Image (tube, rainbow, N blue to C red):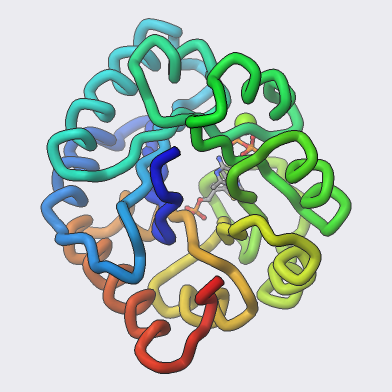
Length: 222
Ligand SMILES: Cc1ncc(COP(=O)(O)OP(=O)(O)O)c(N)n1
Ligand SMILES: Cc1ncsc1CCOP(=O)(O)O
Ligand SMILES: [Mg+2]
């Protein structure tokens, strides 16, 4: 299984966004050792066709392979298999983690959404590789989410599991160190990079803020 990196960049496929341009820009930013490889998650809007999802994922896998990033696919085990992605991220509306593990094998990275300690325990037993925990902060990127749980909610999940906890929802470079201090292993972002005037610079700032958290503090070092 590839290592699970601490910075997860999720594609933004809302109207008017250019996910591949953002990804190409992001992949110009050098990885820094304490963060591991950049994790790229291909996530598409519900109205995208299977063909569109496949083509975006295929392009993302190729770009990631050329620059040492690890590519995951949100929701779609079939698309992940079709493009040779390293794994998937699954939530409550998606295939169960144990089914995805059976289909993808022991070498796949499988992320599971968890909102509390119980979900974290279930995901571990089902064979998840990491947890996506949130929304840490309010977000405008996804509708219909429960209230944000804040760093203390992230801390509660992190304390209840040995799986790496990736905090998601409203994550910015300024908020990232506080989430690591709360026990998160890493963070996932959409808007902090996709909506930035300069996505490469925004990603570089995230890399810098996250890396600084490992300079002596030991924050999030699990
Ligand atoms: C890293 C990470 N964490 C959580 C999610 C959310 O997954 P899910 O709950 O299945 O919601 P959708 O993203 O499918 O709308 C995620 N994608 N990534
Ligand atoms: C998919 C998802 N699941 C929980 S929050 C979220 C969206 C996060 O986007 P942003 O980083 O722009 O807040
Ligand atoms: Mg999902």
